Amino acid sequence: MADYIPSLASVDPQQFGMAVASNDGEVQVVGDCDVSFSVQSISKVFSLALVVANDGDQIWRRVSREPSGNPFNSLLQLDQEHGKPRNPFINAGALVVTDRLHSITGDATAYIRALVRRESGNPHIDGDPHVARSEGQQGHRNAALAHLLASYGNLECPVEAVLEQYFWQCSLSMTCRELALAASFLSRNGIRADGTRLLSGSHAKRINAVMLTCGTYDAAGEFAYRVGLPAKSGVGGGILAVIPDRCTICVWSPALGPSGNSTAGLAALDAFTTRTGWSIF
Ligand code: GLU
Image (tube, rainbow, N blue to C red; front, side):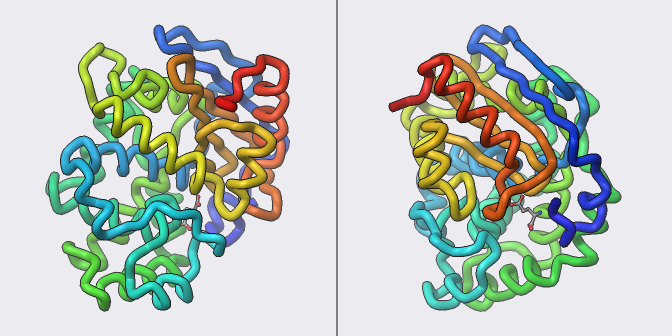
């Protein structure tokens, strides 16, 4: 369990849920699919999608899109690479994306919340203030990353504001069913639940590509080998995976393997693509 965020350490590790949302909005579920959990880094997919939707490719001037080959919260690599994070799914990259979303919209929190509420159909989804506070109190490494980014001129908003927005988005509390529905625009080539477009088909494809190469910590190679899908994991034990043109899957089980990915979640997705033959490869 991610015991560096104290409020996550007390979750029952035996839970397991899975939801598969097909592109027409039908959802198949199993297990603890309606238990809310802390989405943590899965939120990085929504903030990136909103920035790309508003700002096109501009973000790639400030964030690269290569696997990091390093821990997701590495300070060393950020310094060696002069404040340009390797990708938008490690913490440094996500801080830059959140910074950009906050500066475009004036309220990153409100935009992310509105997106996940609208797409999932649950108007009550929100951050968990207890988790956000707990992370803020222990968030020395994220604060160090934000200050390092600022020292290289790669933040537009004040460090404190970016951290507050970032901790809030990580604390979002959602179920497997809600997450699978909320991210369905990625399997529908950028189309929202109401049929309007959030992202161009090309931008949806590119976000899926970055998820495949960078979305599962320092184990994206192993994940692609075993599961063969674009995915984003979080230290709350959730994994969101996309099968373009078909469905979006969310699996959750809190116990994490050595790379920070849910052990049971990874096994379930491995079995799922093996049995269905629905890997993208
Ligand atoms: N809020 C967590 C952190 O910044 C997110 C980690 C994760 O899920 O990868 O450390």
